[in-house]
Length: 190
Image (cartoon, rainbow, N blue to C red; front, top):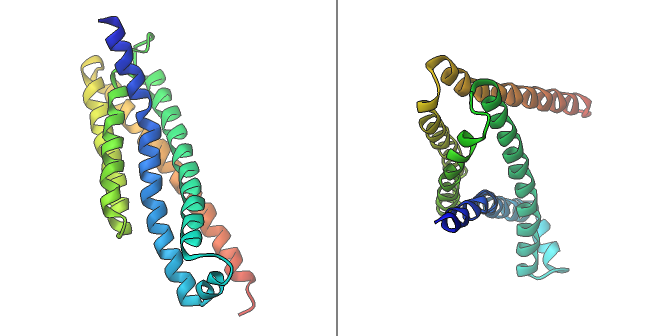
């Protein structure tokens, strides 16, 4: 009985990397299609075909974009895990880690979301919607699993701490990106 429980725990530990690969593949395929379209419109694609085969170009683009998106999603996963464990540290009375192991099964949600994203590789709105819906469902699962062990004030803190951190992070990155964009546009001789 104990061996079966350990086997399930180890099986679930692979789900995050599987979901990262699935989401990365979906976004990489979409990005590859758009880049090939852009290269075709700019007239670069025909020049590239003189040096590489069509399959080689597509495969190289897919590998580069897959690696890029894998790094982005892996970084987001690292930040997400850190924020989740910090919120558990601040708001949960659990010192043995039972709360953390109870929400580990939520990684199945991300695998399902990653698999669904493969069916929406033609549409960026579909990919984005599936990604955000997956995160929302995972948040609901997280709250559902932890709600019996927390009082209402700790539960509110546990929910709003990650939301606040993500909102602050997105705002800072957006502000920095906007400032960089404006400085690049201002420096162009127009």
